[in-house]
Image (cartoon, rainbow, N blue to C red; front, side, top):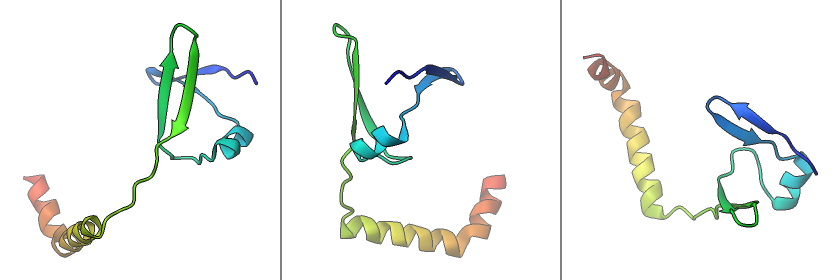
Amino acid sequence: MIQKVLKVGSSAAVTIPKKALEELGLSIGDRIILSVNTPKQIVSIRRVQKTKTSSRQRKIASLALDFVGRYRADLEALAQK
């Protein structure tokens, strides 16, 4: 398949057709690793393996969200100073 390199801001992008996304098991928003083989002029991508969230990480995230929920007004007022 032939794709076109598109300008996106000061960067460039290549679209990945839906069928190719499905074949690779990728979804919009997935993180990928991009590898370049310059001598062969090959660009390859692979999905970053999702890591499992530990119970400690979930607890920290829960505490942070609770803190922000409780003190949102104070935090916003502090940010204005």
